[in-house]
Image 1 (cartoon, one colour):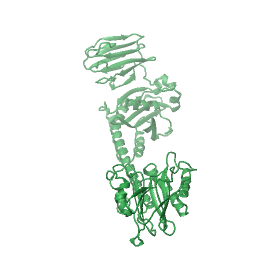
Image 2 (image 1 turned 90 degrees about the vertical axis):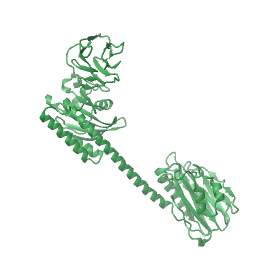
Image 3 (image 1 turned 30 degrees about the horizontal axis):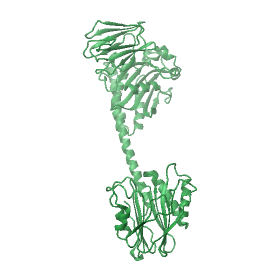
Image 4 (image 1 turned 120 degrees about the vertical axis):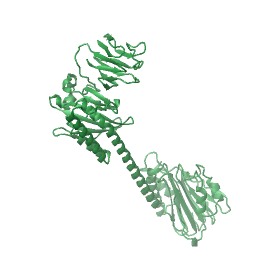
Length: 548
C-alpha cells in the first residue's frame, strides 16, 4: 500500500492511504482526483503516482509550476520510502509498505537492467547551487569549470572539442572513463573517449541512460550499482564493471547537440561513486559547453559551405573548357553558342567540329537533371559525341554509338536528349538525327521558320539496343539553323520560333533574341542554344560564343 502524507502547505496533516488494488493516483485541485488539494499553486491535475509492476512512479502531468522530487525537477521517476514530492506550496511525504529505503532503477529493453537513477537536474535549471559550500570542493569545481571553458575556447572543430572535453573530464573524481557522443539518426555516435589506465576507452555505453537523458533533457546520476541487487543481476553491468555514472545532455534551444558520459568502475568504497554535487557541477558546465558546440557546428557548416562554393566554381571553370568560347572556323558557315546553367554547373552541352571541306558536325544535348551529377554525365556524353564526329560517323550512327556507350553504365533514372546535325555548305543540305530532343528550327532566307520534325527517337541511355535514323532538309545560303534545349521557351521566355523569325540573320543576334527574357537572370532549367548561318563569308573572322 502507498501512503501520501501532506507535510507542508494548506492541507498539512492530511494523509491519503492508497488501497492495494489502485494502480493510478491522481493528485491536483480538481474534483475527482484521488488526492484533492486546496493549494492554489497546484494545477487541476498536477501529478500522478502510477504502479508499474512492484514499483510506484511519480509522473508530472504537464503542470504549470512543475514537480520536484527531493528538491530536483522531475518528469517521471520511481518512488522510494521517505521521498518528498513538492508541488506548488505543498509537500507530500511518500511512505511505502515495507518502510525501507529502496534504490530507484530503470529497466531497459530485453532482460538488461540499467544502472540506478538516483537524481537528475534539468539542464539550464536548478544549477545555481552547483558549487559545494566546502571550500576545497568549491575550488575543485571552479577549476574544472575553468579547464572545460579553456578547452572549449581552444577547440577549432567539434572533433577537437570532444577530445579536449574527455581528457579534461578524466580529472573529475571518481571518473575512470569519459565519453563524448553526438546524435546520429535515431541513436548516438561516439565522437571521443578517454579512460584511465586499465579501463578500455571504446567499450559500449549504456544506451538506456543516453536515451533517458535525451528524452528528459536532464543530467542524470546513476546510483551505486552495488546497492541494487536487481542491477547486479544484469550481465552487461557486471561485464562492464560499472559502479557509478553521470550523463549530461548538451542542449541548445531544446535541441540535443551532444552528450557527456562519465563512469567509475570497480572499488568497494562509497568514495568510488559520483554524487549529486558532481551532477550539478557537470550540468552547469553542460550549459556553456552546449553553446561552444553550437558555435563550432555553425563554424564547420560555414567552412563546408565555402568549400562547396569553391569546388563548384572550379567545376564551372572545368565545364567551361568543355564548352569553348570560340567555335572552330568552317568554310561557308558562321556559328555561335551560349550555355546559361540554372545552377553553378549544368547538364547542357554543345559542340561544332569540322568534318571535311565545307562541312561541319553540330551537336547539342541536355542531361536530365541539374547540378554536379548532370555536369559529370554531360562531360561523358560530349566526349562520346566528339569521338563519334572525329570517326566520321553519320548523325544516326553517331547517336547510336553514343547511346551504346552511355547505356552500359548510366545511373538508373538518368538519360540524355541530343540532336546531331551534319551541315554541308557546298551541297546546301542538312542531315540530322534526334534522340528525344526539342525539334531543331531553320530560319529560311525569306524569314519563314520551319521545324525539323523527322528522325526523332528515344533519349540516349534508356535502351542499349536503340538505333537512330536520319532525316534530311535543304540548307541554303542565308538559312540559319537553331538548336536549343527545353529550358528555352518557358519562365516568361519569348517563343523561340518567333524570336528566330524576327532576329537578323546572324548567329550572335539569334542567340540574343531567343535567350532574352525568362524572368531575368534566374531560371529553373539550364538554357543553351547553338545557331549556324549558311553562306557566311570567311573574311568575317572566327565565330565566337559567350557563356553566362
